[in-house]
Length: 428
Length: 148
Image (cartoon, rainbow over all chains, first blue to last red; front, top):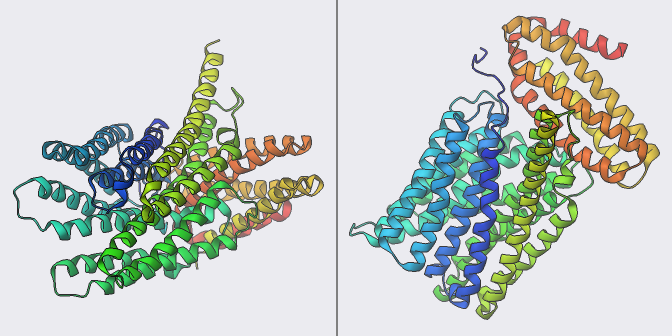
């Protein structure tokens, strides 16, 4: 049967994804500056208010911001089914997510219950709009893409993460007798592993072969991995409340992510496109960091309590500013220049010279930013064990955010200028 | 076995091979090889476009009655790729490595997202809608290829 509604509708207007991509770097900058101002105390534990604030600047303000924008862009291509009312949905996600991300961070710093409730409510509203729109699109999948099921599971995990986050926001300041400790261990698990890593896996199935002309991921992997990992997340969650061993699903989750990382690295080694680029470097670094996280995670269980907290903080650094940021940063350097080119080409071909992708994002400044990123990440990892270095690490993160923001703004500016020239020619 | 999709997907991979060899030659300044490789890549891709535009798309439109849908978008993207081909040929003629590699990066993205939509949506739909005529269609496409 042919789905009658299938129109291969093209990408949403460029303003839809770009508003997310151009907002994200400034949250990364805010996280860097917070590290500069708060300094060594942030390295004491994952639960320091400033550390929680910085973490949420990254997860809500940077990673979720980019991922929501990218998914709205990718759904029509990989699922054959566009997000409905893209402009309205973009407004309904972007504005409350921006306010919510800033508000949650401020609430941690000010230790304010009302602020936390309001900000968590805003972030929750943003995700509710996003989940509803993504679910609408995913329910109408007409494609045989291996990505679509993983994207669906990632979206379900976002729902769990947001619900846990809201519950935590209430439990932290409300009088409700919620199991704070258990929720606090499950919320980051669903956020970093469920929502983020499952989405990275789903996106990788499509973009790794696409960007570098590698062979496809093995069908056995694309068919089973995301679902198995989701099931393990559910088991790990149940283990918080039932007499089940929590290390067993934990070990499975680490092993599953490691299989994904090794497979990706192997595919990239067999790529047809031999010339390398910044995106490939970012992805290889990201996969290396994911492997490191997979090795460290089970090892933590064997450590004594005090050493364990440092190791957990290091695990957080390797997972979030490491693996996740590297992969997203690499993706931005493909998506942003391609969208700029594609939209100009579709609208103004023949009327004006359209810059190619490398003119929107030249190699040199991208590589420079990659260098800053690596330096910032290395110094942050060292600062976990030698906290006086925290402020210096914060400075490097701020510089890295500025370099990334500059690269993206520069591409957006060239887009605008070219469109402007085309429109002026038209009116002449 | 879904042969229309298999046949056309194999063609995509063949074009990918030629694309990657050509880009690599251009990146190390081997312009004689790059120009030759680009010519072969362009001819193979054009031949593939023609099979789709002259054989597959009309058959698909006839069988399904959908003429303003996927095939329309695929034709538009073929036009976009043809424009990039012309620019790449000019850049290769001038031996302008920056321009050539920038265009080739652009073409890769355009081509790959196009192939993905064909392989994961359009070809499977064609396999279903045109199940009765696959032998004839593949025959016509092969004839077109050997005639070209």
